[in-house]
Image (cartoon, rainbow, N blue to C red; front, side, top):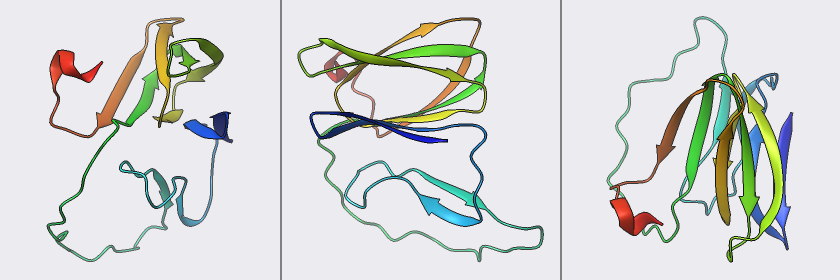
Length: 128
């Protein structure tokens, strides 16, 4: 239910399948990742106290994306830094993927809705 895609010891992606369940909170990413991915499961009545996050200056060197597959099916193709194909995975509704390093491409197998989250600001053509 948790899948790590590795290439030459580099973590390319983490996939959290829709069926994944756990109690409490579970982080999937290493502490040094600029994009953190976690799962939280709390019972009714559990409270997260109101809080404000401190201003912390961070340096981001690589864009990491999180994709939430809202509906449909999509094939994610993974590539090395020279854009050579490595392997592929199919994601379905409810699956989540963190694209951590390397390259990637997506092919929609059927009509698909995806929500994307990544670091900003977005730089347009300078991103690729």
